[in-house]
Amino acid sequence: MASIHITDIEAAINYWRDKKPSPDGVTLAPEIRALAEVYALMVYYKENEAAEKGFPAKAHAAWLGWYDTTVDAPCIAICSTSQGDPECKGCGRTFEEVQNWTHMTPAEKRHTWHRITMMGTAWRFNKYAERATEKKAENQALS
Image (cartoon, rainbow, N blue to C red):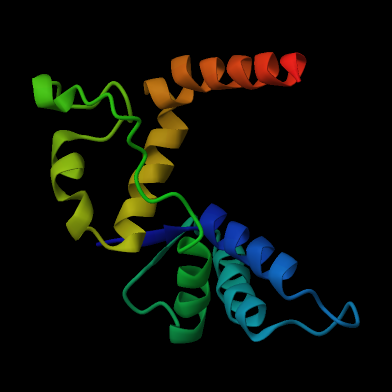
């Protein structure tokens, strides 16, 4: 069953705080309030993930509002699963995740994103991330 990680809830809260800041430093936007209730319960019960099934409707809608602003697939157009690797060297997803990506729920996709980010072994997180940073620095130096 798919679940939503607490770091995604934090990111969604911060997204809504930027989008709808408190007018008086106390009042919260409805999206923030809905997410904050879930977040508080997760902290209280020392849970890192909350099941997507049964997630409060307002909090889920607010989370999806944030989710829609994130990058969908971790693909960097170097897919080694097509060559028989069980996990893609480019993005870190398993063969099954690559094949079923378009059919996965947002929570399933974020669960995969969390796993590959924590592993950090895919080229997306090292070789190509470093090259992108170097290229950006080169472009800034030229301008």
